[in-house]
Length: 116
Length: 115
Image (cartoon, rainbow over all chains, first blue to last red; front, side, top):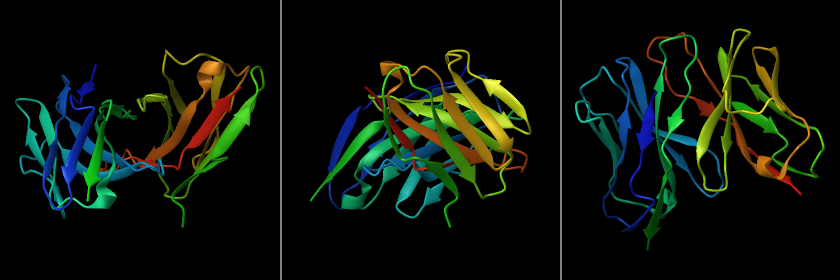
């Protein structure tokens, strides 16, 4: 069974600074994907960044980047130049598509507050 | 152009009632899902549905029944609603069969309140 753990229930950061959100996971599978989703107060789930487990290179999307440590099963999210609009719940998630379906397994989330 | 839509966005009803939430995706995806987000924001899979094959999460009460009239729709019907069913329900879709595809696209969620 896959599990995802986010050990930081809440974090805060000053606008324009950098913050790192932690995530660890556990899986016995080799073919899986990892994601960070953002949920602002509007409650819409927005994909921030994704990482294929077979790729060694860390994924980046503009101000968002990950530090993927496969052996340690760690998948942290770094947000650079934080903006007020980054205030949201952030969920780390994993999925295994070994069969015809894949269910996202979510961590419990980290509530990020960006302060002006 | 809404990719995954859900109706209604808000639903308030009394215990014991039966209600349905509708979901439609226009992305041409082959797999659809229902997730439940509880009051502590924890998201958990309820069902996934791929090419007429339904995978039921064993922890979901049989009062919940997904129905898929076609590949673009996956509706959720709930019988005999209970207070504990109050939550936000998210529909999602993905294209599993394309190599490299992994992300799921979420609908806006339906906040269900049972009184």
